[in-house]
Length: 95
Image (cartoon, rainbow, N blue to C red; front, side):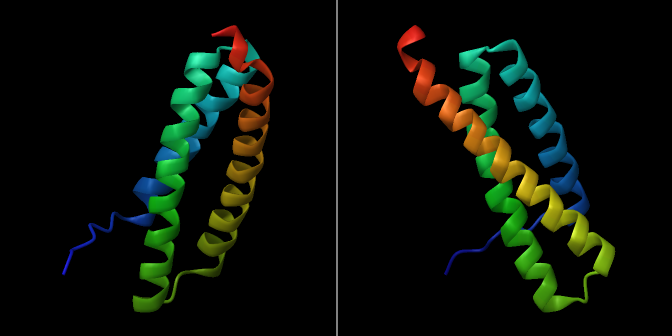
């Protein structure tokens, strides 16, 4: 039986937002290596964030505003990850 280390939602939320900003900057600067690095990190953080949300939702009542902010952030992350993946697929030959 494995133990999952659940971090506080606020901690993961802030890390996701920070990494999202770094990915957007890398996209603006068209820096393929940073795009790949931040995309991978953001994908991992997003997975942890979703797990943390589900875990906390079962154990406590998450405040409605936290749920809405989290849902909006996840939608923005998915959109940005899609943009990054598309950009990388179009430009991977440049590395």
